[in-house]
Length: 126
Image 1 (cartoon, one colour):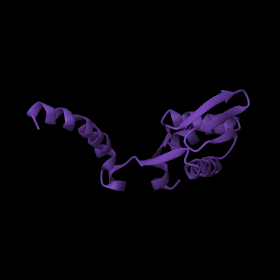
Image 2: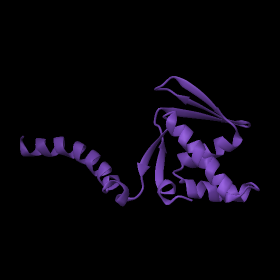
Image 3: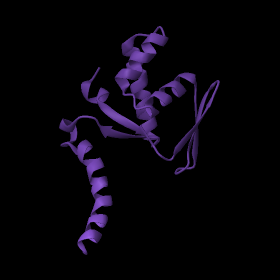
Image 4: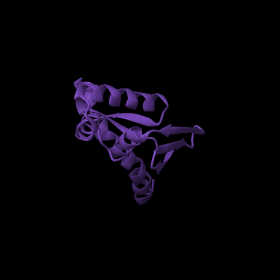
């Protein structure tokens, strides 16, 4: 498996709501006004992505549930994730500081700073 792709983290878009059914899932992207239908395997992958699983762990889980080679599973999972990203249902986020200069550490810190700065400025009378 290509190392770069398996270590990329993805997050489900905040604007996507899902409804589970016996025969799969329905995804509704409120921001785009689009609706998608997933078969049971797609729904299973979606739930694992929502829980923060990466491609490697999804493939490992599916390999225990289906009689399919890991290579084939990986290719299918990779394609599925790419399709979700193309439809803007997922956003990619590097999982390793070496891939983007460490911004995965700084992003939460920057968000925290944007909240702290106004509070801190008020305390200093600025």
